[in-house]
Image (cartoon, rainbow over all chains, first blue to last red; front, side, top):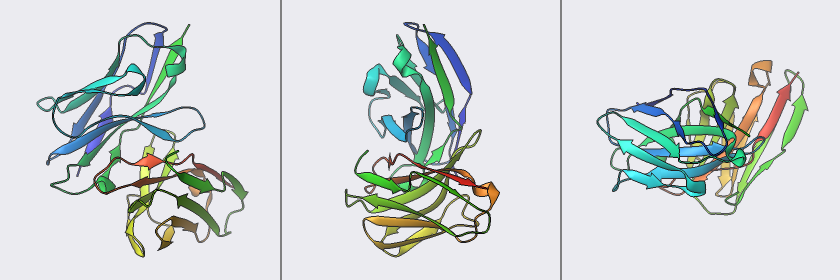
Length: 117
Length: 111
């Protein structure tokens, strides 16, 4: 079984500052990794995904994440945040296609990013 | 989003009453999922479907049942609602081995 730990439940930052949201996972099999964003009163939107290949993954809205297999991490970064990035961010993991399916997606508990002026 | 419609969007009901939530998709995806979202718990899978009439339990399935009689519709039923089932419910869909895409959610309050 897989598990996900998001190390910070809340992250406050000032506008135009860089931000890193941390995610660590645990799995005995190879995995796919995802970041989703949830704006207030909305559903989850896929921000980026790692399936295979380059360990640096670029997503929408200027976000990127780096898959580090040795440290079992998939931290999300943005070099300069905007007020509009205020949202909750969820890291998720599932077994890769060889092992199972996307139906076994497991979510972290979320990190609330607040961008202050 | 991604051709997913959840209905109703908001519902208030009383303990002990039956409740059915509907998820409708226009993407013809094989997989459909029901999650609940609660503060401090993130999203937890209730049930999922991998085809018409093919369903399986998730992490928090007790007190819930599902049905999928058509590819496009996935119903979640609370046979006898309890206050602990007050939550925000999300439907998601995915093609095989592709990321899940989520609906806008149903806010359910059980008094």
